[in-house]
Image 1 (spheres, rainbow, N blue to C red):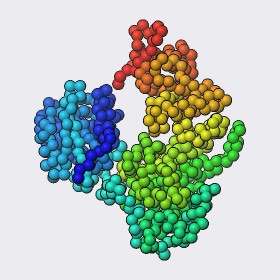
Image 2 (image 1 turned 90 degrees about the vertical axis):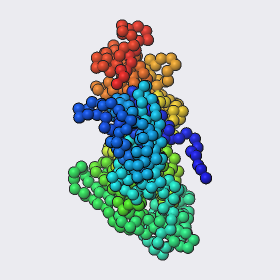
Image 3 (image 1 turned 45 degrees about the horizontal axis):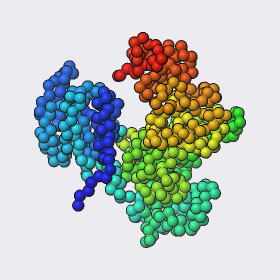
Image 4 (image 1 turned 90 degrees about the horizontal axis):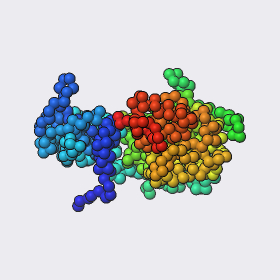
Length: 579
């Protein structure tokens, strides 16, 4: 039986994006993706860096490419290597014979790599595109396993690679039977489960589950089978994690000694409860008493702290004994979780990506206990909670190992920002993570349009246009955004903060001063393909003659060029200089 891929091939889509970027003159380091790498042919430079003529056979290149192709093949979904372009974008090309290279790679890899090789042309430069199939077992190079994280290769252990492979094949380790039975369940873990359910407030389903008998509670969580055996998810939550699953360290300031350390054995629920209690005790309460907004809030929103810790634990790689490390230093919380992103999740789509848990049974049990969301991974709630207090959005990244690291930067809440959100109508928009992300972006960068909003809110341009529509209807005494003046007819509409909001939030608008103002103008010019003094005057809040001086200075620096030599007349503008 044969199978074929339905719909657009994601690797082909990434490959076309990178090829288009190369054709436009962009450097590979700026456009490489998870599944597409760009390389120059090894062995083509002398000791001074001068490029030597190419040959149809190059043993050094073949041996080098085996390691790189093994890394690509080990990566979920595999990928492609574009051969013939240097890291700075110089088109060196390649004369390698594709049939010779395919056979030599097959030989050097000891028959483990059969690579599809395509010949391409990049504006007159011959390149090769090498596409290995996804590995069904890890392919080692020099005795080690590598796969791609972001846009580079990192080493990974065999257990982590195999766990990822099993997940992609549909096997859920957490749903498999463990060696424990109902009688092994810790009574303290069940009580903690009831406590978490009790914290769900007026949720009737949580109250109903919390009132069930011990055995019925476990059965309704689907962590026990008909013979009384706990699943691995049940064993983790209610019996033991084998080794400490969390390592919490509290320091009052960077470089200081630990004032609290939580690292213990036992059930996952008991470990989570102890860490959450310690983190809450170290999370100072702040009194807000400015303007119309009064009350107490924590320097880090506790809901974001819980989401960061719970996600780090529930979605970690349980094939390793390494703990989830939680560093709480001052007002910063950093959660580092073993195991990389899975199932197509990246920092660029993690807010809106559909739920794709590494261990579905464990994730569903955590959701039923109201530890985490059933619908997703809770990142949107974490982002909204941080932005609602005027903090930076969480920084979520993948590290070599692999690990996923989440950083929450807290501190004193921004009372004026909180008052702005409290007074916006309709009130529902203040809970809209898209609105919060776009408002935060406007305060940092000065303007937004659908193309720019799409990656900010991690949605397509059509959804971004709809989100901007909701934003444009919001009111804070007057509209909170207004169209940027000077945009030519027929060009996409762009938006900035309204004059009233600009005055209210002036202290947050760093883009209006110094070098940040120049960066904002250049960002506009490069994104829109042009910039006029009218647009700069509106965006930077300066007079027309001052806007003209700013543009002249950027021209002097070689960053902008005039559309007309006389630099005057109706419709005159500047263009960004290609880099």
